[in-house]
Image (cartoon, one colour):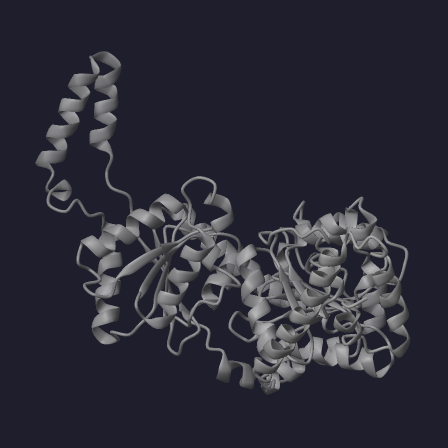
Length: 503
């Protein structure tokens, strides 16, 4: 009974004291649990006042100021339409998302309805990054929760934390697991959310968790949340002009791009000039001859012949540099002699090459005091001597602060991660899909930035040209789709099974 004031003082409902009275009576007459109950009441009071002080110390949210082209991007979403927002990397899609979320939750509250938004991101590092950005604009107004799966599990589970928040940022697999959870007290439902935002939604194909989640939502018979997709590129497939191929990312009723305010977009987002350099392979006659000897004589003779030819060939002497590497050195020296504070990202295919190339650039003196570092996918390699999340964040921070001027990276740096604007993108004998082309080019956000392709053979160059053609086809698809009315688009995606079969 003596602990009752600690609990009653926290209740806002006048009638709630009765239940606290019952709880206090549970310990009587033996008072076996008195100390535990007293400590519990004190802990509630302590947590309450600590949270209150913490809330008072939180800075006021920053106001969202949209550019004209960003105002165009939010129009369809503000009308409650399912839409894919397709805009270049560096155009502030997360700020656009924050504005859409703020408008959506405000309207739900005004209408007397409960709103909750889930923002799905494809990688763990993006959970922390997007949560931080959303908190910048929404703190003190709405509660933002980030959940990457690395947090320690409480006995209450994850669902309670999500349902206690207004906005949650999480990976799609965690969301799927919570939807399928067999524990009723730790299960989520699609009806718990009024809006789903798919960040980097071009991943929504095949067996990617985005695609799995889409199919689950399609099968759900109840009220469905509004769906917003964010991307810089939409895959168009291998066929011709096919509107379904552009819409298969999400079952959306329209694709939103900048059409009226293109000049404003160009003013604030500068695409780099995309050049290419093609270099031939070395002549492998010595290697072929050594292989022939190896078939007819002991291995030692082939090895001796190969060593002799390598020593005699002046092209293999000295620093043993390849033409493609010499060209890379020349590009970097020219760039940093003209603009010492430049930022460069060199994209490579493998983690091993990223590590070794960064080491070579530092040891060869090409960068002098500018230093290079490597960055690769934390999820793919963390199990085998990989780069931890903290190491990845530290590398990005050093790059953004200028302590590191050159970043050698795998595809992990293509999208999403908050990497500072750079003015030189080099693809080192490496190309990907048309989405990679757009994402990598988008990393060159600074004025007068450019993109360079260095290749060993024509196959890589042909792949790059194919990507450019697919990018042009994507823009033609978008232009074609936007000539249709909303009703036509609804009919186009009305057959959900057909649309989902394309994913």
